[in-house]
Amino acid sequence: MIPDFAGKVIIIVKIDYGLHLWTADSWEIVLAGPVLVSGTGTAPTEIEVDVAESPLPPQLADVVGATVAQLLVSEGGDLGVQLEDRQLSVRADDRYEAWQVAGPDGELLVCTPGGELTYFPPVRRESPPSA
Image (cartoon, rainbow, N blue to C red; front, side, top):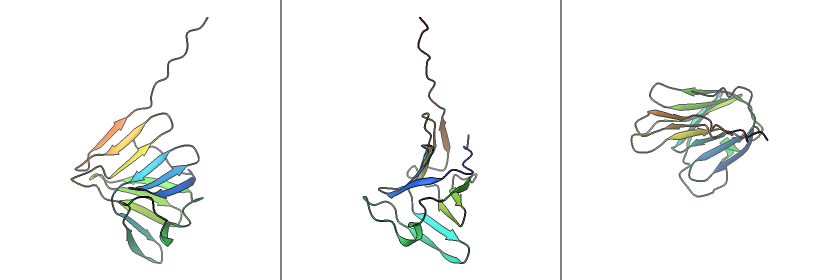
C-alpha cells in the first residue's frame, strides 16, 4: 500500500494550504499539518504550511532536485519523507487529513482523521474495443 519512493526526484515544492512535493514521475505528496524539518547537525524546525501560497522558508529552499530515500509511515499514521540530508515529517491529527500521496494513475493514500490510512487503487483503464 505504501509506494516505493526510493530514488524519486522532487521537481516542484510549494506551500499552499499544505506542503506540496511533486516528483519527476508525477507523484504528489501533500503534508497538510505543521511540518517538522530535521537533519544531521541542525535543530529540528517546525514550519506552518496551513497558509495561502507563500515563499519557501530557508529550510525548504533547496528541496527541489533532492532525491527521496523513502517514505516512512508509523502505525499511528505519522508520515516521514526521508531525503538525502533531512526528513520532512507530519503527525496524524484527530481533526483533519494530515497527509496524502497521489500517483499518476489515480492511486491515492490518505491519512484520515485519527491516523487511519485509506487507499484508493490505480484507476483501471479499459482498452478500446478492437475493430
